[in-house]
Amino acid sequence: MSGIIGSKLNIRGSGRIAKLGTDGQVLTSAGAGKSIAYEDLAAGISWQTIETGSTMTAVAGNGYWIDTTSNACTITLPASASAGDTIVFTDYARNWGTNGITIDPNGLNYQSRDDTFTIEYGTDGTTLAITYMNATQGWVPTIDKTVDDVPVKLNDEGIFGYGWNGSNQSMTNLVSNAGVVATDTTGVGTARRYPMACEYGGDKGIFGFGYTGSYTAVTNLVSNAGVVASDQAAVTGTAKGNGSGCGYGGDKGIFRGGYDSSSAVTSLTNLISNAGVVATDTAGVGTARAYVAACEYGGDKGIFGFGETDSYVSMSNLVSNAGVVATDVAGVGTARMGLAACGYGGDKGIFGFGNGAGGKVSITNLVTNAGVVGTDVTGVGTGRVYIAACEYGQDKGIFGFGKISTYESMTNLVSNAGVVATDVAGVGTARQGPAACSFN
Image (cartoon, rainbow, N blue to C red):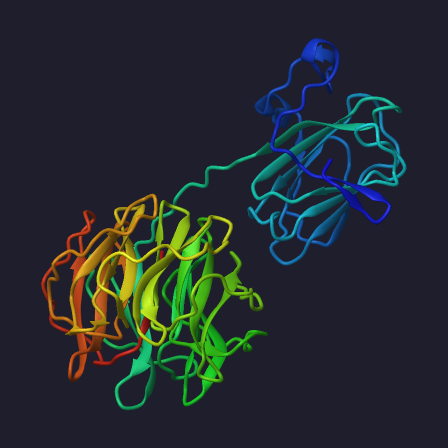
């Protein structure tokens, strides 16, 4: 129990297995006095098709995959029940933390509480099994377990998109699972420079925001085949550009920072659901800055680093696996802006290139799987600014494009040990200010 909502008690899932009855035993469909295991329970349950509605009525003996990607769901329990009746609910898309479920006991008790209490579950990855005991106890959770470990799905291919070469561009260039950059693909969506990009849904990507002559909040989804979709309606939030994006939570993303429509630096963030839906602004945490870079680390977390305020900085901000941005971490390495970042090795990251006080650099800074940024690594390849980077081949990365004194299309591969290779001759339209993400 975690509080009162109006006159109703709010009961939230605890992530623990409940043990009920005598001597720690639970009531099962076979009767009292037997212990329960998920596999035993599931074997006697009739699993239904995926439920996506905002309301549903549950039937004893059934199991339900509840997909709350688009909306929360209120579940009405049967109006009558017999001892041993069992129902199972599972978070289909690991999204109950965003859109949870509410259970209506429909006149019966729930954990001995009457029907005036509100029962909510709001933790990603929860499986909830409830069994009817008797009129006094009513429905009682026999399993309330959160699956915390999300399998890491490593993307195989990447995409560079948009940018500027004297005019705004919308073309894209695919990156194979061997790190080979393809020639231009005809542009889709609003031509612009300095957009942001990241992964979502475990195998897809998204380009968002950018500068067309003014800042925009338009987005373009990237399918798991690397196909860029037409413009989505502008996000209800601050139009901006010159920020960055990264994944978090295994299947979601986040955009942060840049310049807003008044050309002021911002630290606002926008979360991206595992369906590619961009949320409205979240109040910024940490120092507002532009030309920042971002990447994933630790399998399910992210980091924003470096950038420009009224001077170059090297500070960073960690992103939790719930998409929460932390306060500033003191900078490590050469302060700079216009750099890029990507993952490597499956759980680590790398910042590289950019413009520092001494001019354009090719130095890099490795990020451990605990989110610790390392000191400068001597640069390899041609120093340049306004570049992009993404993952490829599941555990490697690539830096590409940018500007030296002219627009460039050269690339530098990153091994699964974080070692940057020398320049690879450019393919496609040379440009600065593109963005990049991976897909599978």
